[in-house]
Image 1 (cartoon, one colour):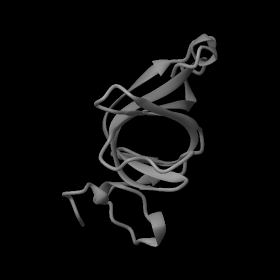
Image 2: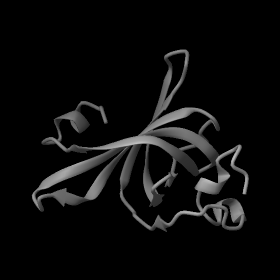
Image 3: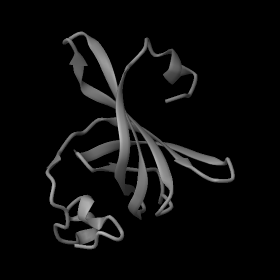
Length: 127
């Protein structure tokens, strides 16, 4: 394991490498929006699909290669509903620990569940 780079927290078979993490991942396939946060206030947005999610990380498809080490905000339409009625959104912040064209792995540093509104935020282009 390489805990200095956080590789023990990312997905198996990423780029053909062997299993490196100690926690379980679940093969969740949901729409995802991401925003790479830059220090110069420039942001990179994109959409993708979750490939798997664990308690410490998430692997997802991307529109291009994301910069390793950068903070990312992720927003996932969560498959479960609050009280079986209210749709939820999983919002996480973390660092890109692995990236290649078409997919990236992020080590989750913090997250929260939010209720999804009526779609007005999505229509306005926000997460």
